[in-house]
Length: 82
Image (spheres, rainbow, N blue to C red):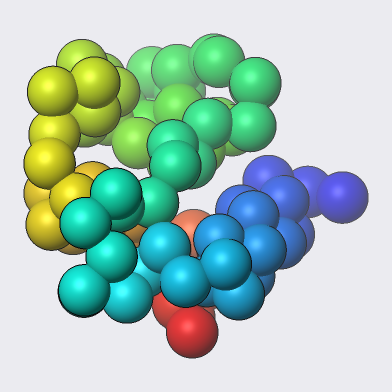
């Protein structure tokens, strides 16, 4: 599987569990797929498509902020969130 397929699968699992629902106060889990390698050209993690700032912000982000980060990740990966 390539990184896009991995993120798409993770997004599908998270969506099916209801984490992208705006009424879900818990918010989605991290898009991290344990491939922590930053691409110097794009500035994105090669595993989860997040920027360093998004990775740093994740721990303190509330549910809406986490959904926003996931939306950016999905867009960068060319994945449609369900």
